[in-house]
Image 1 (cartoon, rainbow, N blue to C red):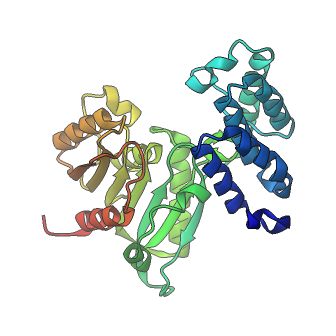
Image 2: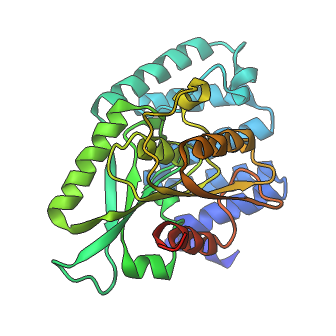
Image 3: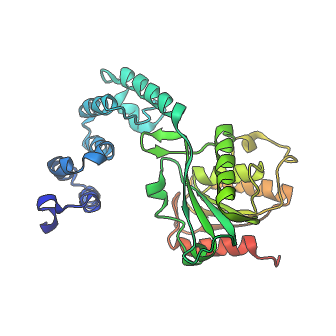
Length: 321
């Protein structure tokens, strides 16, 4: 390929080429290619170590990953090596694995001590300081970050009218990815802090605050809205699970219900039963919601997201019942 010559290779093109070879099942060529050019991208060491680990797993070369994990940990990275995760089953009998899991846990614990929930603000192109704007807050999915989530929740209408805020959870999944957990008091107080900082900088219409999320972020968005962590007018959620406490709760009197919800699930989404239970709870508390299941979709962002974002906003802010 012409574009791999010299230093001109961009990280995205490099990554695309690896993914292409992977999708063709050509794991060895993908590995050779990765090893030939990885030194061009010293800042992507961690991501590329995960790629190399993945390729070795595809070729059943689990032992070779022990050295990669060791080197990663030597550099201060952690991978969330949890014995309950099926992909780690083949490692459980390998020499040195117990120690790797223990130091992974320790690095994870230390990172959590000092991490904070971060946010990035997108203002409308025609933004006027001092004017009042509705707010749209985005929660990423599990094992995600700013870079991944910013590819989503994009819609020209949304961007022209709302102050849009992307959050990145304090709760590390691995060194460079994050997740949310329902009922998480630390996340609650972080969200309150972010909201108050936003209020200091912008004039926000507190009757038009929409929270949005995917998967773990969808679950936490519903959870914090129902618990009234900050004032929420409605939520737009893709493939949510059910907040942990609501799995067993049978009394819902404490939940805030004067908001609207827009839920989207996939026909093959493994959280479908969670969503059914959620709708029963919404029915019980009289929360006005719309729930659609997309044919052929599994646990993922829908295609043509923009359609659903528009529909969700309309459902939440439309005053006609």
